[in-house]
Amino acid sequence: MRIFLQLVLVLCLVVGTNSFAEPEAMKVLERMGIAAKQLNYEGVFAYQTGQNLQSIRIIHRADEQGETERLVSLNGAAREVIRTNDLVTCIFPEGKRVNVNRRPLGRGFPSDLLRRLGSATPYYEVVKGKQGRVADRLVGELIIKPVDSYRYGFRLWVDKESDLLLKSELLAEDGHVLETFAFSTVEMDKTIPDSLLQSQISSGTEMTWNRTEPESAANMAATHLLPRWHIAWLPEGFSLVAQQNRIKAKNGATVEQRVYSDGLSSVSVFIEKIRARHSHLHGGSKMGAVNAFGTILSAHFVTVVGEVPAKTVEKIGASISPADGTQR
Amino acid sequence: MTANQNEILSALVDGELQGKELDRALQFLDDNEQAKAQLQRYQFASDVLHGNAYENSQVNLLERLSTALDDELTYTTKIAPKQKAQVISLPQQFWKQAAGLAMAASVGALAVVGVISQPQSQVLPIMSTAAVEAPVQTLAVTAGGNRWTVEESEIADRLNTYLVDHNEYAGASGVFSYARVVSYDTGQ
Picture 1: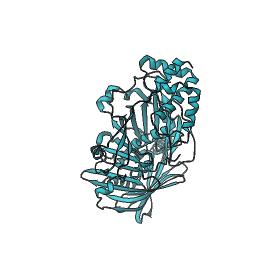
Picture 2 (picture 1 turned 90 degrees about the vertical axis):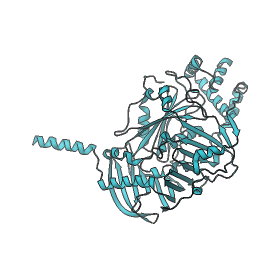
Picture 3 (picture 1 turned 180 degrees about the vertical axis):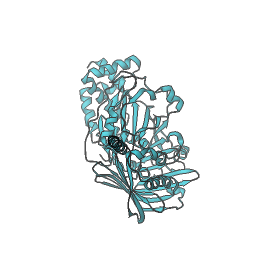
Picture 4 (picture 1 turned 90 degrees about the horizontal axis):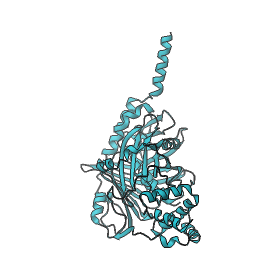
């Protein structure tokens, strides 16, 4: 009897740390990741957070050249984001500003859910929900619940025919919807002409151009930035999935980025040398469902950013210290 | 605050200190609240003189700058505006490179801020123990929306830059993640 009770206890512990994921639901999630990269589509979706609602046009083309995508805000200033295989260009007409970031590693769209899904399984319950309709198309619902309060949950509605994600909700611990993305119209498998992927900035517009470049691996090694910082706490299941250094063209500042993910949620830690003339976030801030926490350590701006709860970025930020033990 | 101390702060704002001078300035800042406030005023003045935009900020910088000038008349002559921006004709090759087919070739001139620097040439010496008391952001906690809950546009700009880089690794909502960038409400 005693052995049986011990076995039950062990099973409870195992169940407690390994959440449930329906195999069929995981397959849908995998197919969704593939569809997002391989389909041509054009549509309009709504983005709602809090009291704010924004309509955005999205055009995505995938061909032998790789992926190209353009998003345009349909309300207010016509802000645009254009993504190609190796660049992200953000155009802010109201500020007459263009930011150009070269993609890390030049490997195309790195929102590669597929590659990381396996590691997410223990930390989320993934089940299929009801069928429904989004943008006049039949969808299947996926419900993703986290095992703890350090990450958000999701409800995803995936197109039955194409597996494209048509609606997404980000959920707080109490089930409150923090953010909603939902297509109102979408067309798939159509030919996307070049003209739809070009910026509509009017001819002759003067813009301020800001550009960042990734630092080469050789220079990263030379500057010895990466070993200098220690992150003592991360939510269970989070591990380093990417790291890069960028050089800001504006002032030559080096910004180190480390990305930690559990497979579905992710946070980035940014470490930037202070250039002696700037203000910085001290404490928490948020924009929609994205939280940030900033502090200053050893003459560096340290900032944690992610679509995770505020307490997660705060706890991660508070656990960061220079590897040599020096602190302000 | 002596004239010499003001000069040190001015040089610090202009990024002209290095090595031991920089260490001493940072130590001075660490120990002196008045110096921290003075440095913040210098930074505002420098940013305005250098043309860094604050038009979207709720803070009336001109008023604050005016106050700072009243308090300390000398620094306006000590902060020489640096040549930080060049206006050049838009290199159409750049646009083709920058966004390939994605960018219209008809886009006009650009004001290019800064230059692409060599990675190792412009970084400050590593300050292992020095603590820089950069101006600290006072949070303006508001209801959730399409902008960062911060007061200074400079900080919001930095967070936006980080957000763009972070979006590369967005999670389950990856298809939509850049909506946060194009929806950003600058009307603070």
